Image (tube, rainbow, N blue to C red; front, top):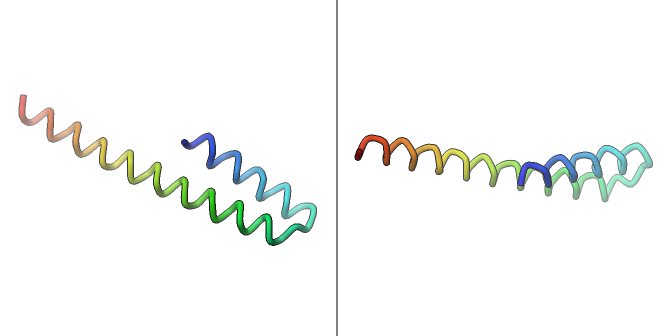
Length: 56
């Protein structure tokens, strides 16, 4: 999933260099969304792992 963040970030940078501001802002928005979803998934899996360690 983080690979998609990097891809959309690169698309945003390339689009901003060529002056496609609408494409750049859309790609940045998608990259931010995917990043925060991945971050939330990481935090949830970390908490679940720590809880399962305490139960053993």
